[in-house]
Image (cartoon, rainbow, N blue to C red):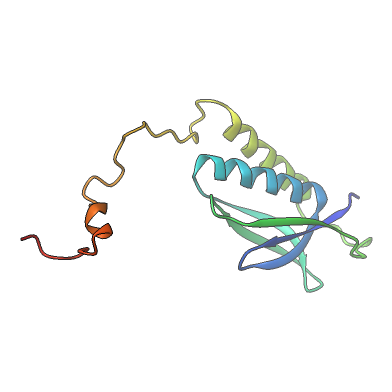
Length: 131
């Protein structure tokens, strides 16, 4: 059995998971952030002494801290660790390949919100009726 790490995410607190799962989760979060997209993953965790499946939303602003944990869980086998490792590894590989279907590209100068007038926000006239 491998070691354990504690994963902290802003607004979530922390939970213990398999060390390799924690490392892959962090690596995947970096890839998701680089692409400016979001994704959710479910990992096996130990939280408050109970086995749980924890779903996490990852995105460009996700704040994750992963630290080694010496929690005494020699007799605890996290469910689906190999499946989660494989899934995260596949997701990382998919995101890191150029031209992948999840690769987000935006042409320079492309207006995502063509009707949004940021100039009026800067002058304090946001929401004002046109003269």
